[in-house]
Length: 116
Image (tube, rainbow, N blue to C red):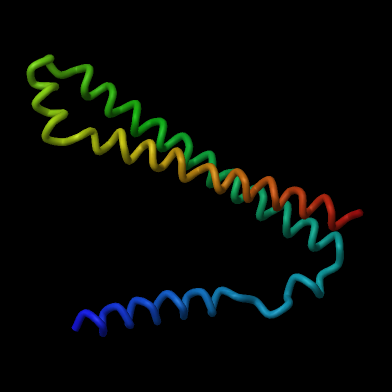
């Protein structure tokens, strides 16, 4: 049963990767259209990066506010039981924004190079 589930998950992910590929669509575009395509991708990735960044900061900030509003004895018991899950999730979300900013910069550079 375990092998069947593992195989099913592997097939599911491989189908998603294969269906996401486009066969040479970006090479037949004019340089200006390719530039616009890369600029649009760059803007989308930048917006996604900022959303993740601000959401992560907000989550971490809320956890800090929750802990600050509790009495000290209750806060110690709460921290041991809950282990600051919102704060940790906020940190992970903030760190997840970094690849989007890097990818956005690369797309912007690709756009600049297409018009040279």
